[in-house]
Length: 229
Image (tube, rainbow, N blue to C red; front, side, top):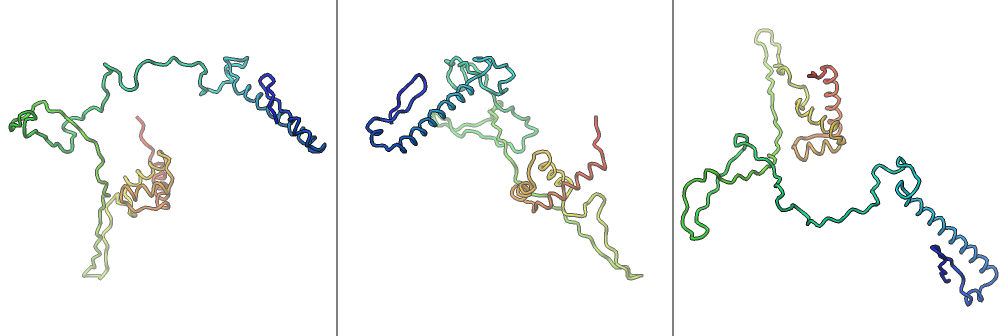
Protein backbone atom coordinates (compact mmCIF):
# COMPACT_ATOMS: atom_id res chain seq x y z
CA UNK A 1 0.00 0.00 0.00
CA UNK A 2 1.13 3.53 -0.77
CA UNK A 3 0.56 6.64 1.30
CA UNK A 4 -0.48 9.58 -0.88
CA UNK A 5 -0.34 12.90 1.02
CA UNK A 6 -3.40 15.05 0.48
CA UNK A 7 -3.19 18.21 2.54
CA UNK A 8 -2.62 17.34 6.19
CA UNK A 9 -4.28 13.93 5.95
CA UNK A 10 -2.83 10.87 4.23
CA UNK A 11 -4.76 8.79 1.70
CA UNK A 12 -3.96 5.10 1.40
CA UNK A 13 -4.20 3.50 -2.05
CA UNK A 14 -3.56 -0.04 -3.26
CA UNK A 15 -0.49 -0.47 -5.53
CA UNK A 16 -1.47 -1.61 -9.06
CA UNK A 17 0.73 -4.74 -8.96
CA UNK A 18 -0.92 -5.81 -5.70
CA UNK A 19 -4.40 -4.98 -6.92
CA UNK A 20 -3.90 -7.16 -9.99
CA UNK A 21 -3.33 -10.22 -7.78
CA UNK A 22 -6.44 -9.63 -5.67
CA UNK A 23 -9.73 -11.34 -6.17
CA UNK A 24 -12.87 -9.26 -6.23
CA UNK A 25 -13.80 -10.28 -2.68
CA UNK A 26 -10.34 -9.47 -1.27
CA UNK A 27 -10.27 -6.10 -3.04
CA UNK A 28 -13.70 -5.20 -1.66
CA UNK A 29 -12.61 -6.19 1.86
CA UNK A 30 -9.38 -4.15 1.60
CA UNK A 31 -11.26 -1.11 0.34
CA UNK A 32 -13.59 -1.29 3.33
CA UNK A 33 -10.59 -1.41 5.66
CA UNK A 34 -8.98 1.56 3.91
CA UNK A 35 -12.14 3.60 4.24
CA UNK A 36 -12.29 2.72 7.95
CA UNK A 37 -8.67 3.76 8.43
CA UNK A 38 -9.29 7.10 6.71
CA UNK A 39 -12.35 7.64 8.90
CA UNK A 40 -10.36 6.90 12.07
CA UNK A 41 -7.61 9.29 10.95
CA UNK A 42 -10.18 12.05 10.51
CA UNK A 43 -11.60 11.36 13.98
CA UNK A 44 -8.13 11.46 15.55
CA UNK A 45 -7.33 14.73 13.76
CA UNK A 46 -10.58 16.25 15.02
CA UNK A 47 -9.90 15.11 18.59
CA UNK A 48 -6.39 16.58 18.47
CA UNK A 49 -7.82 19.86 17.20
CA UNK A 50 -10.29 19.97 20.08
CA UNK A 51 -7.64 19.14 22.67
CA UNK A 52 -5.48 22.00 21.44
CA UNK A 53 -8.35 24.49 21.73
CA UNK A 54 -8.26 26.91 24.65
CA UNK A 55 -9.57 30.42 25.42
CA UNK A 56 -6.41 31.89 23.88
CA UNK A 57 -6.79 30.36 20.39
CA UNK A 58 -10.55 29.90 20.09
CA UNK A 59 -13.91 31.38 21.08
CA UNK A 60 -14.13 29.23 24.22
CA UNK A 61 -14.96 31.18 27.40
CA UNK A 62 -12.16 31.50 30.00
CA UNK A 63 -14.26 29.51 32.47
CA UNK A 64 -13.94 26.42 30.25
CA UNK A 65 -10.19 26.19 30.87
CA UNK A 66 -9.01 23.90 33.66
CA UNK A 67 -7.75 25.99 36.63
CA UNK A 68 -4.44 24.09 36.64
CA UNK A 69 -3.94 24.20 32.87
CA UNK A 70 -0.49 25.38 31.87
CA UNK A 71 -0.19 28.45 29.71
CA UNK A 72 0.86 27.90 26.13
CA UNK A 73 2.93 31.05 26.00
CA UNK A 74 6.63 30.15 26.28
CA UNK A 75 8.44 31.82 29.13
CA UNK A 76 11.70 33.57 28.37
CA UNK A 77 14.65 31.42 29.36
CA UNK A 78 16.58 32.82 32.28
CA UNK A 79 20.28 33.48 31.80
CA UNK A 80 21.03 32.82 35.46
CA UNK A 81 22.69 29.61 36.55
CA UNK A 82 20.95 27.11 38.76
CA UNK A 83 21.33 27.26 42.53
CA UNK A 84 22.03 30.17 44.83
CA UNK A 85 22.99 33.40 43.11
CA UNK A 86 25.93 35.55 44.01
CA UNK A 87 25.09 37.87 46.88
CA UNK A 88 22.06 35.77 47.83
CA UNK A 89 21.49 35.60 51.58
CA UNK A 90 22.20 32.14 52.92
CA UNK A 91 19.23 30.39 54.50
CA UNK A 92 19.96 27.95 57.31
CA UNK A 93 18.31 26.71 60.47
CA UNK A 94 18.44 29.14 63.35
CA UNK A 95 20.64 27.97 66.22
CA UNK A 96 18.84 27.23 69.47
CA UNK A 97 20.12 28.90 72.65
CA UNK A 98 22.72 26.99 74.72
CA UNK A 99 20.15 26.41 77.47
CA UNK A 100 18.19 24.13 75.10
CA UNK A 101 21.20 22.11 73.94
CA UNK A 102 21.20 18.54 75.26
CA UNK A 103 24.96 18.04 75.08
CA UNK A 104 27.83 20.38 74.27
CA UNK A 105 31.11 18.93 72.99
CA UNK A 106 34.01 21.43 72.78
CA UNK A 107 36.45 20.78 69.94
CA UNK A 108 39.91 22.32 70.06
CA UNK A 109 42.74 21.92 67.56
CA UNK A 110 45.83 20.36 69.11
CA UNK A 111 48.44 21.59 66.63
CA UNK A 112 48.88 24.51 64.28
CA UNK A 113 47.84 23.52 60.76
CA UNK A 114 50.89 25.34 59.35
CA UNK A 115 53.87 24.82 61.62
CA UNK A 116 52.55 22.03 63.88
CA UNK A 117 53.12 23.89 67.17
CA UNK A 118 50.94 22.84 70.13
CA UNK A 119 47.92 25.14 70.62
CA UNK A 120 46.37 26.15 73.94
CA UNK A 121 43.60 28.42 75.18
CA UNK A 122 39.93 28.97 74.42
CA UNK A 123 38.07 30.65 71.59
CA UNK A 124 35.39 33.02 73.02
CA UNK A 125 33.60 33.08 69.65
CA UNK A 126 33.82 29.43 68.61
CA UNK A 127 31.89 28.25 65.57
CA UNK A 128 28.66 26.60 66.70
CA UNK A 129 27.50 23.54 64.79
CA UNK A 130 24.26 21.95 66.02
CA UNK A 131 23.00 18.53 64.96
CA UNK A 132 19.36 17.60 65.52
CA UNK A 133 18.50 13.94 66.02
CA UNK A 134 15.86 11.75 67.60
CA UNK A 135 16.46 10.05 70.93
CA UNK A 136 16.11 6.33 71.34
CA UNK A 137 12.41 5.81 71.96
CA UNK A 138 11.74 3.71 75.03
CA UNK A 139 8.27 3.41 76.55
CA UNK A 140 7.74 4.53 80.13
CA UNK A 141 6.49 1.42 81.93
CA UNK A 142 5.13 1.88 85.42
CA UNK A 143 4.37 -1.27 87.40
CA UNK A 144 1.86 -1.08 90.23
CA UNK A 145 2.29 -3.93 92.69
CA UNK A 146 -1.07 -4.31 94.39
CA UNK A 147 -0.56 -6.17 97.66
CA UNK A 148 -3.34 -8.30 99.03
CA UNK A 149 -3.25 -8.61 102.82
CA UNK A 150 -5.33 -10.72 105.09
CA UNK A 151 -6.93 -9.32 108.23
CA UNK A 152 -5.77 -11.06 111.44
CA UNK A 153 -9.17 -10.45 113.05
CA UNK A 154 -11.78 -11.49 110.46
CA UNK A 155 -9.47 -13.34 108.08
CA UNK A 156 -10.73 -11.33 105.09
CA UNK A 157 -8.18 -10.39 102.42
CA UNK A 158 -8.05 -6.83 101.06
CA UNK A 159 -6.29 -5.78 97.84
CA UNK A 160 -4.84 -2.32 97.46
CA UNK A 161 -6.71 -0.17 94.93
CA UNK A 162 -5.05 1.60 92.02
CA UNK A 163 -4.41 5.32 92.53
CA UNK A 164 -6.83 7.80 91.00
CA UNK A 165 -6.21 8.37 87.31
CA UNK A 166 -4.47 5.05 86.69
CA UNK A 167 -6.27 3.19 83.87
CA UNK A 168 -7.49 -0.36 84.32
CA UNK A 169 -5.84 -1.39 81.07
CA UNK A 170 -2.18 -1.28 80.03
CA UNK A 171 -2.34 1.96 78.06
CA UNK A 172 -1.68 5.34 79.61
CA UNK A 173 -3.56 8.53 78.64
CA UNK A 174 -0.71 10.05 76.62
CA UNK A 175 -0.25 6.88 74.59
CA UNK A 176 -4.00 6.68 73.95
CA UNK A 177 -4.08 10.31 72.83
CA UNK A 178 -1.03 9.81 70.57
CA UNK A 179 -2.61 6.74 68.96
CA UNK A 180 -5.82 8.65 68.27
CA UNK A 181 -3.79 11.54 66.84
CA UNK A 182 -2.11 9.22 64.33
CA UNK A 183 -5.47 7.84 63.20
CA UNK A 184 -7.70 10.91 63.24
CA UNK A 185 -5.36 13.77 62.33
CA UNK A 186 -2.55 12.15 60.34
CA UNK A 187 -4.97 9.80 58.53
CA UNK A 188 -3.10 6.59 59.30
CA UNK A 189 -4.85 3.24 59.11
CA UNK A 190 -5.30 1.11 62.21
CA UNK A 191 -2.77 -1.42 60.93
CA UNK A 192 -0.14 1.23 60.13
CA UNK A 193 -0.68 2.89 63.50
CA UNK A 194 -0.09 -0.40 65.29
CA UNK A 195 3.00 -1.05 63.17
CA UNK A 196 4.35 2.43 63.97
CA UNK A 197 3.92 1.92 67.72
CA UNK A 198 5.62 -1.47 67.60
CA UNK A 199 8.49 -0.63 65.23
CA UNK A 200 9.36 2.89 66.40
CA UNK A 201 8.05 3.16 69.94
CA UNK A 202 8.71 -0.44 71.05
CA UNK A 203 5.15 -0.73 72.34
CA UNK A 204 3.23 -3.97 71.64
CA UNK A 205 0.07 -3.04 69.78
CA UNK A 206 -2.54 -4.46 67.42
CA UNK A 207 -5.06 -2.95 65.04
CA UNK A 208 -7.88 -3.95 67.39
CA UNK A 209 -6.22 -2.10 70.28
CA UNK A 210 -5.93 1.09 68.24
CA UNK A 211 -9.69 0.99 67.60
CA UNK A 212 -10.34 0.50 71.32
CA UNK A 213 -8.08 3.43 72.26
CA UNK A 214 -9.65 5.69 69.64
CA UNK A 215 -13.12 4.93 71.01
CA UNK A 216 -11.97 5.63 74.57
CA UNK A 217 -10.46 8.99 73.66
CA UNK A 218 -13.53 9.96 71.63
CA UNK A 219 -15.87 9.15 74.51
CA UNK A 220 -13.66 11.05 76.97
CA UNK A 221 -13.59 14.10 74.70
CA UNK A 222 -17.38 14.07 74.43
CA UNK A 223 -17.79 13.88 78.21
CA UNK A 224 -15.33 16.74 78.79
CA UNK A 225 -15.59 19.48 76.14
CA UNK A 226 -12.34 21.26 75.28
CA UNK A 227 -12.00 24.75 76.72
CA UNK A 228 -11.98 27.53 74.13
CA UNK A 229 -10.11 30.78 74.61
